[in-house]
Length: 151
Image (cartoon, rainbow, N blue to C red; front, side, top):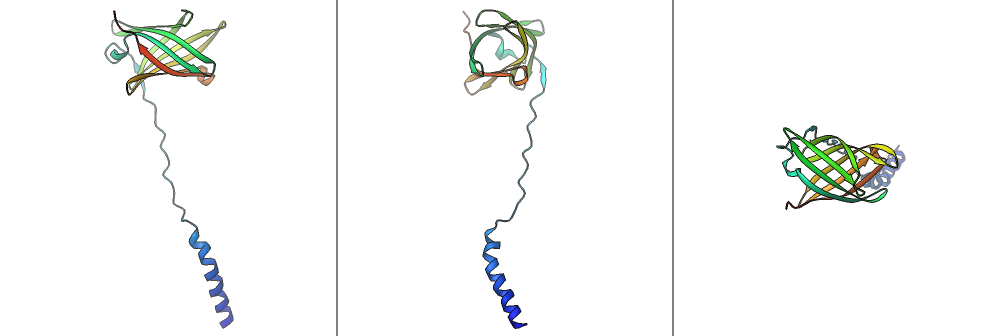
């Protein structure tokens, strides 16, 4: 019996460093996904910072691209005209605000095909970030938007 107790104690001593070396498992707090801000209709009041003419440029999965954007008040709504570098107007279906960002629902035309897209202008520090998502991720473009100075 005495030998069994000594053997058990020896096993316990030898196993202890391995047990102590294992860190206790603590559950990590799960990251709560942030819900994107709800889209609300853009008005001359809530989108005042975006009213005017803009130069948009960026680099994307299909290379560089540039656009011009003109946003004008029309009564209690806004109208927007987006043109590509060839001065071809793209169809703007919706002008909305998502928090502080302007969001345009646009149909982009390329090579005779139509692509539903979202153009977002988001203030960040001292610049306006541009993000275009074409056909739910088929292509993306990131860059900046610069407001043209009024003459």
